[in-house]
Image 1 (tube, one colour):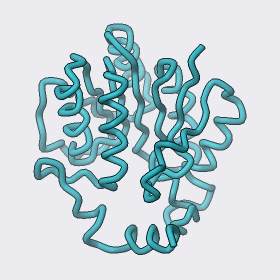
Image 2 (cartoon, rainbow, N blue to C red):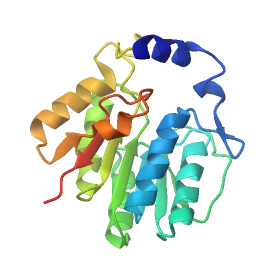
Image 3 (tube, one colour):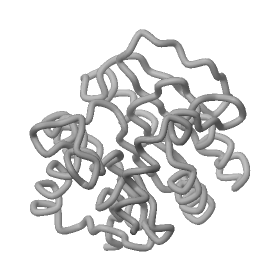
Image 4 (cartoon, one colour):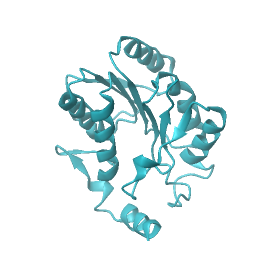
Length: 208
């Protein structure tokens, strides 16, 4: 039943394709947005790194969550498209360019060094296996113990959505990453609402 509803929900034009946050497109499942909200309220991050900005709706949602929890944190949102986000927020830093470029990682280094609190990472850019693997390798270093590294859209490539990739996509990259990264584990509690676009992609870094 869950798999059938997932297929129906994903392929219906009025669901995630029309989801808005404060009027801005987010291209996300509201249940996943709720999980992010709960994580941010609990962790009170000093920095959230997001790859894949699109319209800026998710970055705005993250920034508002930081305001609500009073962490004083920053959102770094990285995208290499020419599309200019339609939002501004004092907590958001937008960077145009590849998420695995030297420039993007230098900025992530700078903000992570200055962060007063945990670092949470959300990967939602190019969903090919190779690119997600490169992002996991590059950005896992910033995730603080107890915080999360989220590889989004692991549902494509047949899990259960059979579109978008021929190389296994994000989930294959996550599987390979976990095999070599014993300090990260999947967090089943992040999938407790049953519908998530990131099955197996919610990764928690173990406390030392």
